Image (cartoon, rainbow, N blue to C red; front, side):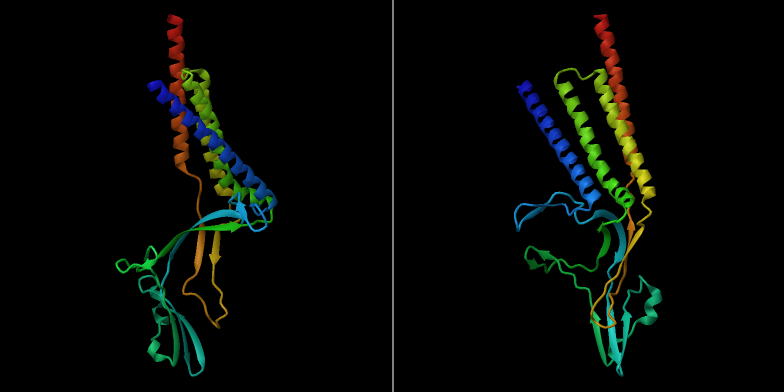
Length: 277
């Protein structure tokens, strides 16, 4: 019974690793092709149906962080035929704007735009839960650089993890096969584990370097335009580049290298035991 369970576990592990190798390898390949030739990333199944085979189709994903609270509101007033636009800001967010606030009753004509948040429980609006505000913190922009060098620098941070996972999955697949064969503490097993550790460390260092090189896009400003005369939204958005270099990757790589050392030591003990016998 135990041997049957072990066979099932190893079969599931091998199948999962093979799927991981194929999936991430194809994702990296499609991403490289899409970015290199500025393709749409669409695979047309027929005249009216298509599927996206790469997240890079609309452009290179650029992850940014926002620190924006949505306030109320824009006010357009008209007195004696003259129009004025004011932004109504919350006092705790922008005290310097208090002088620009106006009373709607003082204008002959005025419009006020309020932020309306609705919470739904299924298809109907919830009467028990209300939203009193919102903060936008994350954003993904799709960029299409004209320079090939910019395309490489902006896309590699997304492609490298695909390649790393595919490579590590291949190494793990060989380890699973060795463990299933009963020869886990071998020199080749310790080398494969060390290769995985070094691959993670090198990838982390490359991401750190790419993070420093990504100076062609540091911030993205978002504004709103309208056909309404003198209209503008009560806020502007500025997105700041998210750093993708993570110190945790270096620690993970270092720990895996220590595990490789332990496997190497186990291999030496096994050789000594075999020689003694």
